[in-house]
Structure formats: structure tokens, C-alpha cells
Image (cartoon, rainbow, N blue to C red):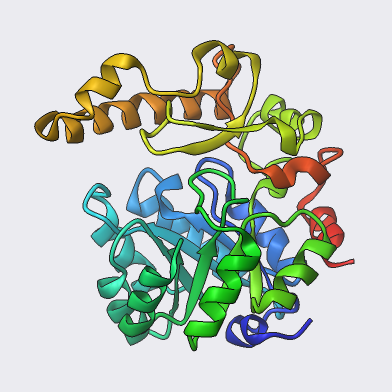
Length: 315
């Protein structure tokens, strides 16, 4: 399956192993590269810049022909580590950077100086055109089948709209669990896909066995949208705990969110509480099971090595 994405990253298959908070790690990406795809890790998965630097060096030492690796950067002001992370990535080197939640202008400028490609998350044509004008190398089109924070448009509608109106490659994010899904995305005009949720149930993932098993036991119909994590709708598995606490913001949050002066602080508090709950559920035993995932876990039937998950996607 040779596409513009395989040409850009010199990979065997047009697949990016999506960056997932708490889940993605060096072991997963090394296996991804061995499997002929690109792997990506959120820079925020590393507490310090030195840890990030060490991860880059290990991946560079294990790079193989037909594979590639990159990192995800949150590029808005809420990420106080952003500038330091960008500096480390540009100094140490990687194949690509995926930007999220803000303007990628500075990232594109600095990354291109050292030959790093930049792909940008977007959910609509307006932002797709903006990042194209800024010099992005490709667009990550986040559709309504994605896990975590998702877009509003179906994969088909979003891909066709962006590929028709943009001249750079479109990489579809969301709704891919088997090879037939990839074939569909490519038929709509995508140059490749970004796949996340199926890799949660990989042996190499940095989460608990309970989280991985949940991706096996639950399916697409068990994915719900919740406002209780970050203040922005996010997809999670509808566990008994999620059912208990509900998926809507509390009446007090609803009232405070209508106050322009308090809205920012309410969202910050909700984000902090939600992220802490998500981290606890992903990394240790707790009855407060808030597990982020997308509907593509439908095809996850057992916990497998990353390479076997890749085989399911390409064969």
C-alpha cells in the first residue's frame, strides 16, 4: 500500500501508531517500526526533558528501514513544557512531530530547519487550510470515530472535504480496527491512517492489564461521551463507575461555566481532576475506572503483541 504517507516517512505501510497519553512508550514504537509503520509518543508522557531525550536516543538507536518514529506536542499555552520539548526534539532529531490543540506555526518553523516533518491535528476544513498555509507537511483529520477528544464529522465526509480542498496529504484518525477500515479510508482520499485504541490492548502498552482487558471485553456500543474528564467531551468505556458518576457536568459546573470570569478556572480544575482519575485508572488498581478508548476496540479480541495487531491491520 504505497501512498503519499509511505513516501513522506519512508515506511512500509501507511499507518501511524497514534500517540496516546499514558499508553504509548518506547517499547511500542520500537515494535511499530519493526512492523513497518510509524510510531508516535506524546511528549507529555515524559515528566522531564531528560527522560524525553533518553527516549529519543533509544528510538534512534533502534530505527529500522521501513519504520519511523515521532512525538506529539501540545502546542497551546496550557503546556508549560512545550518550548523545552520542541527544543529537545529539534536538537536530538525524530522523523515527524504531530501538533495538537493550538497553532503549529512555531513548531513548523523550528522543525523544518532540522528536517523534521510536521503533521497537524484538525477537525474541520477551516483549521486544515490554516495549517496548510503555515507549511504543515500533512493533516491529521480527527473524525467522530476517534478515541479521546474527537471531531464531529464522519470519516468519509471529513476526508473527502479535506482532500478536495487541500493539497497536502490527509491522514485519517479514528474508526480503524481492521484492514477493511484502512481500505475504506484510502478509498475516500486519505493518504494513510492514525490508529490508537487497538494498541491499548498490546502487551507493550504502559497501562494495567485491567485496562487492556476492558478493551477486549467491551465493544463499540460501550463507548460513550463524557464531560467529566477534561470539561471537553471525551470518549470512554462505559464501565459501572462511569455509569455511576454520569457523563454530564454537574449542575454547579454548568452554572459556573456560564460565568465568563470563572469558566476558565472551572475548566482547569475539572481537567486536573479528570486527568488524575484517568492516570490512576490506567496505571494502578482502582474502582474509579475511567478508561479512554474509541469504538475501534470492537475488533480487539485478546491482548496481543504490537506486531500481531499490526498484522491484523495490514493483512
